[in-house]
Image (tube, rainbow, N blue to C red; front, side):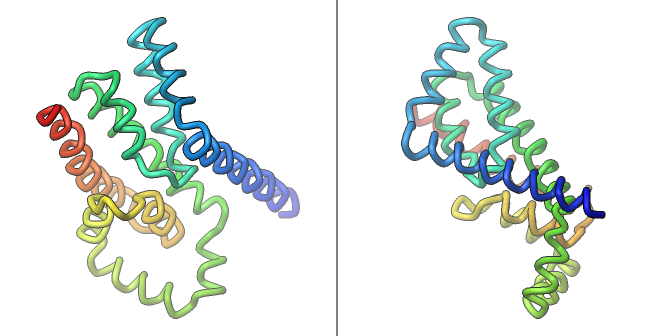
Length: 184
């Protein structure tokens, strides 16, 4: 038990470090990722795809929305492959965040510190899991990663959770990617 707490602390520190680096790159070095992707595409388009997918998979741990990554991808990739890579990254990221929240035992923390709110959220989610997850994932102003943490902490049915994220994010990402292609 004591070793598990140490492992959790190390992972939380590692996670905070990744978040800090993500925010640093996003806010203070905005051209960093664009430059790296340009270099990768100079090597091979497949390497560029792999790099984009890796960034998409890791992005969820930073709580940075997928939209900036999509905008970056629009500069380099055709819409079809971009949508597929974006969705693959989102689904891997959502799955990781879902299980990571369970590993960190965020449900215990939330249930101890926010008893009434958690009971209300659980009640609402249990009655309307899929529509809430789809709507939250579709809403451009809400971070899907937050619903991933909440669903993981509240132990929402994983298949239903992933389906909701896939539907909501699939639609909004398609609108962004194919809509941008249409207008550009």
